[in-house]
Length: 302
Image (cartoon, rainbow, N blue to C red; front, side, top):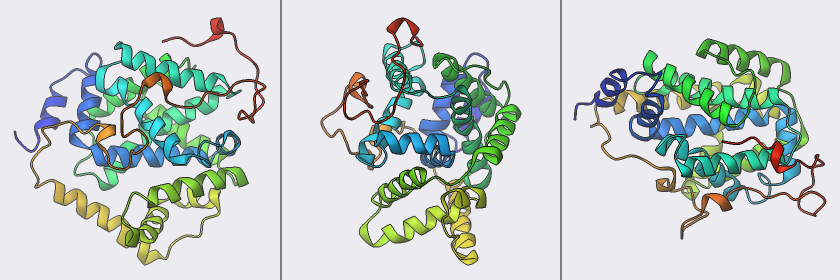
């Protein structure tokens, strides 16, 4: 296989009809590590929106059993990529995501913002640090993939183009990024978890490295001190050097699944999609956020 095999393969496909295959090739073959890092940073950005970060703190998942919540998020988002939206496993995963969201009074504009981060942050990450940027075909496939996911989640007024997603994300962050004590707890807990992904001597540098990759508005929203300028430059240069080095390596032949990643640890004996995530029950201890009870008929289907 040629080193540009997946680029050539993706550009031979039609992003209007083959967007799942193209996106799968991007995530599981061409850029598995980069996409995992970028999507992790995308989720991290959502904590800086005070309404989102506060809710995650109140529900306790990302400050209590943060490893399980991290794993469940990754495992639930993967099936549509791996098997397509019409597969029963993907439908089960989206039903589980929708059931969790229905338990809380989440405004539609927050859903749209989170969706935008999944489109925009990976593209910008690969522009800066990848062995190559996404091709126009791959970027269009990403837009179509997340528009489809958004429709399955019942999100309204989804942006139609990458430029629309980027404008939404940037303008939303300019208006809604801000400090919240609960959001800071969620961010601290997530950073602490990410440090455990590395050997003990590397954990403190890993936390510094993560903060060095954050842009100023994101750090300021959490009131994190900015690492020294030299640390930021070295951190970013190291990632760019990695991207350049990858150009000389053979192309990946086998897919990299979420469960193959060493830091996904909660289910050594396997898992069932239907049992992932949280199960808040109205009026029962363990669901600390007030919300309106929804009937099954009002649920967003898949």
